[in-house]
Image (cartoon, rainbow, N blue to C red; front, top):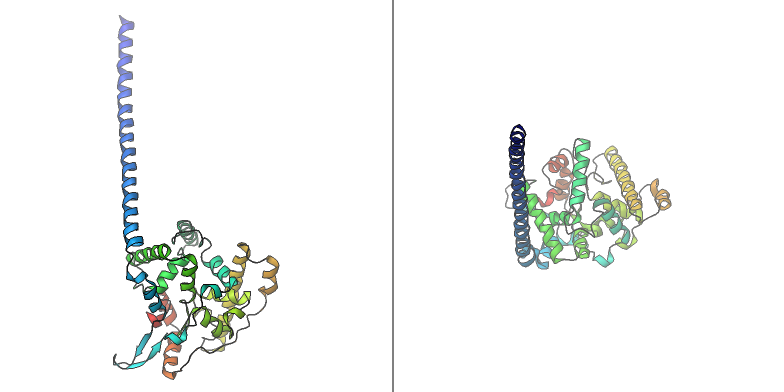
Length: 328
């Protein structure tokens, strides 16, 4: 009798132990199914939204006509009364449009190597690059790297971003996906090459070649291409002609040289130039030669632009997310 009671008690204990384990297992399976279903619904919704708002109906602002009008835009400057026009920044004459087939190979290699190494692979947004940039910022305890792709930067340059809010950045991201869905990688780089801010009322690589080196795009050296690719991050910071004193101009030249060497180093890392080619020009001073790109000058507009390039304005604009105050 004792043995039977013990056996019965053990069976009851075993049954009681199995029941909770079975309940947890069933709950885990139901939770897994829920997560899978939720994931499928999210993916399906994302696909539907992508097809509708990115592929099928991206908006008129994705048309070639609209983009051409943006690249040829003018920004009026008014007197204090807000009505009388003083002049115009960025009129059509101040952009020397360069088609993709005329872009220097060295510049294309430089801009991709320094700004977006996976440009030819990602769909407009590089999650891997974004994660890497965020990790670098966390380790540095501040913002030392950005995660935006060249496509996102093109979207930012083409379409006005009012602020740095999450909503504005999300719109910028969607526009980047739209650009990738409707234009080739080459065309997007062509837009970018002709839209980045250089100085005063000039944009794009054609103006940069003339302004910094008094050359045509086809005449640029590898070192000069690296400088132009590097200066897009902060044009005023690296502008050797913008400082109000010789000391400030010397600082800008030093910064530009360092930035150029960084870009050249990235080109070595990406296999575009050899270590020997890098060492051959690393210590060579950049041969800056200021060229004119304005068809009509204005003393007052020049003064406005000069003031905007002096402290504290560049820092104020940077904090507000404004790369170029002339079109802000």
